[in-house]
Length: 169
Image (cartoon, rainbow, N blue to C red; front, side):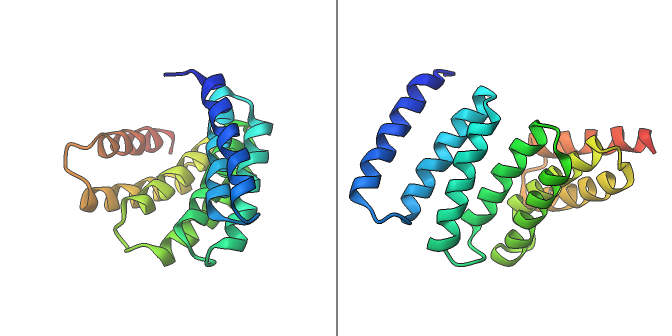
């Protein structure tokens, strides 16, 4: 609904309750920091988003096994903020770390893998590295073709991205 201040207030209140009720490195605390980070990201307050996403990641690193999908999501969220800030090398390294975890934690044709490839492709595109972008968009396309319905919007979007990149080459 775009009511970010209300969402933020509720998430922060929830976090305060969890801080009292749970141990300091409980995964539910990480989830709260993640939710707060998402609100700040949607508000365009990237430094606050990063602070919360990084706190979420710190907790996840302690609370979860090293190849847990939630860790991958945390790296991806951080990457998304860096990408929005135009800090593409930082975005790329976080997206790549996310992809490494997903490759271990998920089956080879899981849609989240395709999303990771697509995100990396977008960063390469923004960096002007069109050949690399094309390779990653094509990987995303192959997985989505196998894992989503033929009329899914992700498939249409990635096909369009592939054509746009091909025009740049």
